[in-house]
Amino acid sequence: MSNQFAIQESLARLGLKSKNPGTSTGIKSIDSDGDYFSSYSPADGSLIGEVQTTDSDSYERVITLAQLAFEQWRKVPAPQRGEIVREIGNALREKKTDLGKLVSYEMGKSYQEGLGEVQEMIDICDFAVGLSRQLYGLTMHSERPGHRMYEQWHALGLVGIISAFNFPVAVWSWNAALAWVCGDVCVWKPSEKAPLSAIACQLIASEVFARHGMPEGICSLVNGDYKVGEMMSRDTRIPLISATGSTRMGKIVAQTVGARLGRSLLELGGNNAIIITENADLDMAIRGALFGAVGTAGQRCTSTRRLIIHENVFEEVKSRLASAYGKLVIGNPLDEMNHVGPLIDKEAVGMYLAAIQKVEAEGGKAVVEGAVLEGVGYESGCYVKPAIYEAENHFEIVQHETFAPILYLIQYKSLEEAIALQNGVPQGLSSAIMTTNMREAEAFLAVSGSDCGIANVNIGTSGAEIGGAFGGEKETGGGRESGSDAWKAYMRRQTNTINYSSTLPLAQGIKFTI
Ligand code: UN1
Image (tube, rainbow, N blue to C red; front, side):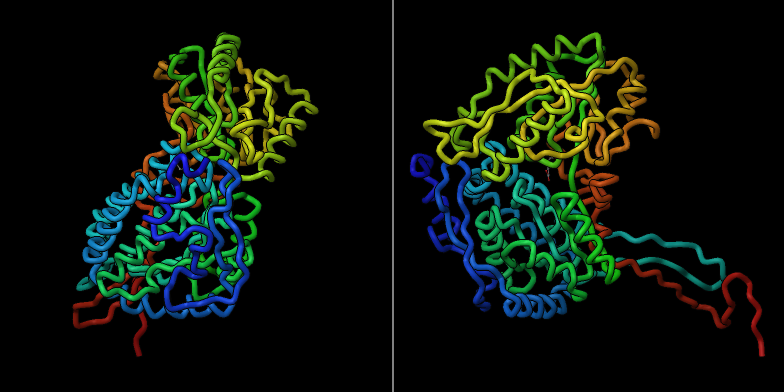
């Protein structure tokens, strides 16, 4: 099946030889003795390639080279750094279809979503180019005569990026493009479930740096499982660890990085809801809920997991959704006829089945039943049917983020109750309200409304643009990546006070004479 969609040609154009394409570190001059691990496509179960684990010796060499590169890179003027990032964006434009195809094949999201993910990388590069001329600090008025105060932003150093399988490349770029224009160097540990997409990006970016005569340690890759992430989290040479993944992983990273008083930037689990009020445009609400719940087979941090529906429209929403689910075509994500691709692996299928069992045991009622699909086209064993359950918000399974296309329907009577239900989970990433009523929309956005990092009106919970700060509260981890002023996390702030008078007055009016 893979040949049918010409994946081998894309791999070759991306510089990935089939079977054994991966260097352990992404740096040409470093070898590793680490074991190999395999990347299989959930689309058809094929082995795509084998990648070497970065062992501790090669890790040491990566960090040393990154430190050396930082000495040089931080002195390159920020707008010139931006120029290089512009070229990385252009190189991604050239490789968009091949990279989109690889992301889709390796991770299982639809080809359209694979292309969207690469577009997200291109967009953040463009954003970072502009930002490279806008790393602004403030000036302050000193309380002392003949004094001036201001703050400036300096490069921080090495930025460790730990990314998840579901956005195997875009989340790296949100971090890396900003970090680079800020003068930092990046060490990336991609998910061991999608290492080839990462290697392809590493090759694209490092080629651009090399063309500009820049040292290879500006952009490096380390491969392997959580143990590589642990080395990074403990490493005092890495002042910032940006980690995306489960809340469980994030807590471990935060504690390890916190124990050495390093900085962490966390983007963790979501349990995102859409409130559908009786004043909603139901056509829009159904479409928004559908893509939010089944897009990326429910494996986005921003996927819609709960619909909180007003009792007056509950039955209508339920039956319209059930009929929309009936039209979903599930199959190979590279085939554009299909709406939904596979889950990442059989372990994820196991978690999907366990969640279904649990919601049923807790009293949930199936609206659209789930199933693992079998037969022609489904040989990888990773394809499942998106499911819908009527449930209660307090069910343990509803409180939990399951990375699968399972949607819970919850009924409400008053908007106040709906907002309490929306906020009544441990996570706080994304949220939305569907309404044409201005008062309802504003109540949802007010300080007593949604407690999430993202709150949308008449848009689903997923599909955030790169221009906004991305992240959330509570167990989502509190970090902000991507747009707005998220760049500040990648720099160190320095406050400077300059005395141009000929006396030395002390602050706070303190007298000290001898
Ligand atoms: C994620 O799931 O980790 O907002 C990132 C979205 C995408 C990014 C999701 N732009 O759905």
